[in-house]
Image (cartoon, rainbow, N blue to C red; front, top):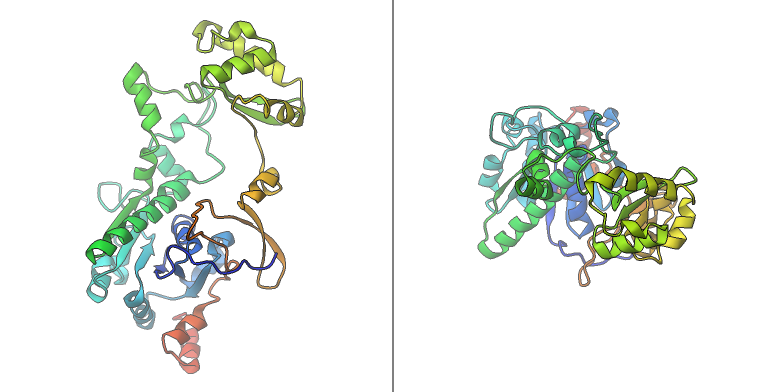
Length: 386
């Protein structure tokens, strides 16, 4: 439960200045921090009361408060920017320019800077100034239309795919690509990450079947979304659920024979018998509990999993062995549960080195590092700079 020993990460010599907030940008900088980058998160203290400081995202980081609307705050920002390798921001297009902390301005001070902007709709085009959240980017990209039950309203997923994958992960990927390019050319660059763009990139499979068959994919009624019994979810006797992904014929055959329906082996995609097969499968799976199906189907090798809730995940022996769920100590020595690092590198593994930092906790340390004395720091507090 103690802090993990220091491990050299792949990004150990990289400094990231992150003045994004909420989820997309902080998720991106968490990835970079997990792999060794020094991340200094910068946020205006007026946001503290909003309640959207997502604590797990701030492990391995420093966090400072800074008012960029003050001259002194802007001066501190530029001092940090001159020493940074990467700057990450999540304002709407044009806001960074109004604040005077945009890419072109920073570029004059730091020609090698990599400057990444995460927005909902990108830096160009007629929708660039629209406000939005995860659900809006899922909607405009066409992804939300494919989520949920047939003939019902689209279902908003319980995790933020646009924020995390289309925003945070794509930003991290873009930054790594830019760092690689800089290592060869010595030049930084600007990165334009649109969460809507990122979600559109999730559509190759629907596009494939649309181009192949000519029909629009339908919510809850496509090959990989509840249309057939081979790729579906089922309720168990204890009101829990299991998922079946027996798409290939060999897996489907095993499942049919075990459940006592050998006659369905050749009927996997028979439209006329689809409802009948689904009905029989639903009845069959309701005869045993989820735990019973676990014991049976793990040995069957037929693409099956229990549908786990968060409590199941946090207690999973498998995920703990994979170090995706870990016990960690906070700054008071109390045990906290943390999500691990999903990218497993053999030479430079990512790691959890320090627990989540509190809002503004690193402000004084970072300012001291820049050469400010205690009187100056106190005056910054009084004048609302930090």
